[in-house]
Length: 128
Image (cartoon, rainbow, N blue to C red):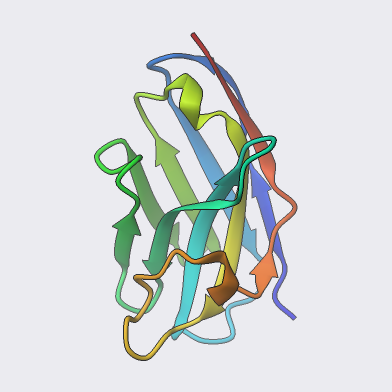
């Protein structure tokens, strides 16, 4: 079973940057989707990015488009979320997730129900 471990969270000021990492214990296939989600207290889990490993294609929610970038290092089996120009509304626990590729749609979906494997989360706090 694939295991995911996030790291890289912390506290920054508005306009700052953080890079989150998601270490993957083993990739069973390139036909999987990886996703980054976040959840603030009292709010539902929100998808911010999804990523198709096999095609190296990323998708982003409107709230983070242009500020967040997803990338991967296959040799390290690690997925990254580079977060720039952070805002207080970005404060949340961030989760990495993995799920099967969807037909149709590929990895464009950021619905949490499409992902079956989750990491434990890492906290991001952005102060004004």
